[in-house]
Each structure stands twice: as C-alpha cells, then as structure tokens.
Length: 255
View 1: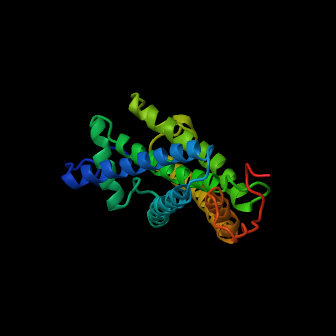
View 2: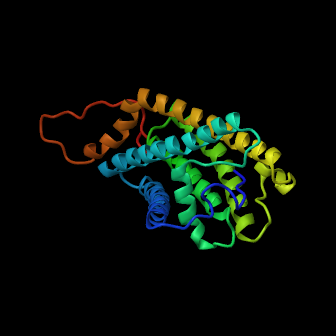
C-alpha cells in the first residue's frame, strides 16, 4: 500500500504496545528463518526425530502468519470497494505494528508500513520453505513438494518486490519504487492506491491458494513424509526377534 503521511493513525504517538508488537513480529520472522537454516543444514546429515517436529512447527507458524497477512489485504480490498477514492487504509493492528517499526526513521512516514509488509511476506515464504524441507527425505514425486516449490518461487519474487519497495523508501525516494507502484511513475492519489491495493491482493490470493493446495497434498502424503523421519529409529540396533518393518516410499539417501 502507498500510505501518505496524513493517513489515519500514521502520525499518532508511538506507544509501548506498538514497539513491543513490532519487536515481537520481527523476532517471529527471524526465528523462522533461523529454523529454516537449521533444517537445511541438519537435513543433510543423519535423521533426527526433532527435525520433523521443527518442520511442522515452521509450517504452522507460516500458515498462521499468512492468515493474518492475507486478511489484511482482504480488509484493504474491501475498504477500497466501499471507498474507492479514499486514502489508503490499514487495520488498527497493522497501524500499530507499522508505527512501532517506523521508529527506525521517523522522517519517513511510510517506512514502517513497508517494513511490516516485508516482514509478513518473509514469514509466509519461510512457511513454504518449511514444506520443501519436511518433504526432503522422500524421493520421487510428491505433489506437496511440487506445489511448495512453486510457491517458494512466486513468493520469493514477491519478497524481492517488497525488499525493493522498502529499500527505496529507506534510501530516501519520494515514493516507493517497485512493480506494484509502476516503478514510482504513478502519482500519489486514487490511481496509485487502486493499483497497489489490487496488485498485492491478487499476489497474496494466488500465493495463499498455492499454500492451501500444498498443505492439502501434504496432509494426504503425511504417512510417506513421516516415514522418512521414523527411519531414525531404524538406525539403532533392534531387539532380537523384531524384524525391521518394511517402509514405503523410497527414502532419500537409502538404497
């Protein structure tokens, strides 16, 4: 969204709740990407039972984050439908987070909003990467992994868009520069608000649909995926008289 300095609530005083919410939201994103790094590294070695639970938690946090993120874009689109010529709008809780994040440079009123959406997008992207990671130990074709990879590519491009938007404002551009602002060529006003509201709404609608399809297939394929992590127990000596259970499908790294 392109948020003028006179937008509702953007110029109000920053409260402790605004600051605490901003810090926690950014910490949420950082923690998820630390988990991504740990999973990517640990999945190269022997199977460990905690890997599966960590990946499930990462996916769950990504889903929760995207539900909150997408509802913000739905609310903005609904507000535009009711008020197509009004200034850009955000929900009160998004305003609070944006005010808290905007403290990094109070001379740039829209910077907090850009950081907020950048953070939300990277939380979503981490959740999609979590699906790719949790299916990594299963060889062959998995629909959940196929859709998650598609989502990673799309959301990765969307994330780059938000990086560019945020950096352009942070570096002093008079307005955010990116695909969703037509590289800053659209003058502030109803045309820019309309274009950016619907650009990001459609991008998040498609991304959310890809996530939903990937999760649907992951649920159907959960036994195959879980079997890859159950193999951790097969590496340990088994009691006499207990034959090792035969497992399907073929697991990565096993004959």
